[in-house]
Image 1: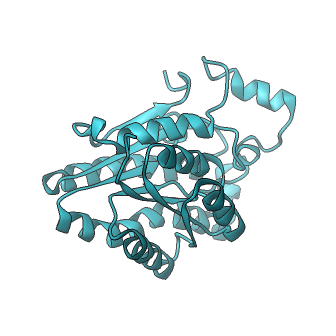
Image 2: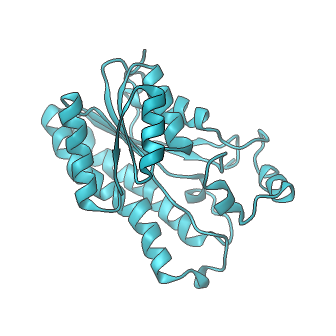
Length: 246
């Protein structure tokens, strides 16, 4: 029960890596608010795990404010914020991505972390404790071709994590990130362009361990970084990638 008594928000918790994190957090004793713009997904995961849920579009300030307030109201406070929600784009030449799609990627992958910090950090400062975990990507460390703007958004997440960590450490707040490789989630097809045996084999050939990241992998790593066992760890962007970035 490494997270016993902890109160957490997991964005994008209605599927994929977010669902894996919710399930692990609940198994380790945390109270969890599952936040997702997919209301059905959020409700499904919450009901399956005995969690709370809320519909939230993390690119919208009003939704993020309501999300944090809901967690505080339902749990009596907040200890852990997991910024997991994210989107990608289909592989294509960097100059070909439509402007509205570029804006959406930055809103979900980048602006959401700023919005969540605005709401959560003042509460964490007041209580002199708190943990923020941002889900970045190996794409921010070792970019794949034809995914330029997704790569760039995840590079921003890694830099933001380090900047947040050094500024917030004096207030007792830790900030870390996880860098998964492509995983068995709804985003997999987006990254590959098409989900075929040949394309999967091509992606897997770049991962020394020979498999994709799973929601369970991310849940296990997230649990450690958000637990008191990691009390001396901040500003880290930890690869959960089977050796892809070596």
